[in-house]
Image 1 (spheres, rainbow, N blue to C red):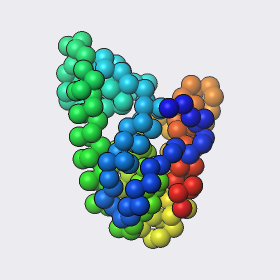
Image 2 (cartoon, helix red, strand yellow):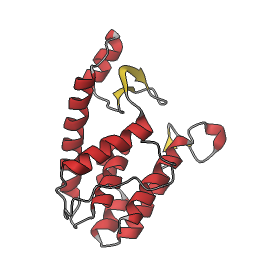
Image 3 (tube, rainbow, N blue to C red):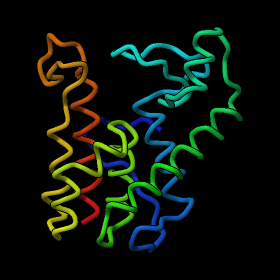
Image 4 (cartoon, rainbow, N blue to C red):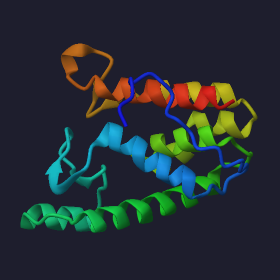
Length: 177
């Protein structure tokens, strides 16, 4: 799937509302992650020094395999990603109090995958969303463009992919309203 970074990601039409989303949104999320994260079965250090593998998975098993120089199989990556996404969306559902479209759920899941559920749940984005300001919540993602203490909207900081990722998340979210 090749997408222009600021175009919305295609969202499957599952006609679901509320917090629980079907397999179609998870499949779309994994495809969206592949666009931004790539898929690397051999663990590596990301741009801020965190051992990472597959489509951006972090954690103790990734750190262990990084230290040992071991790769993941594609099946292991698929399992890690699915398990991580399901647990992440479960945590997200605990802090979201309003129904959302599939596009919102996809965009917020992609965002939370990158910033973590703790950051997501404590964010102004969630406060706005729970207050019923869906468009304002979508636009909040564009403010999260810092990595390793650097503003990624500044070209010299060499992390311009992050603002492009946020622009795609915002576009996906807004288009679904």
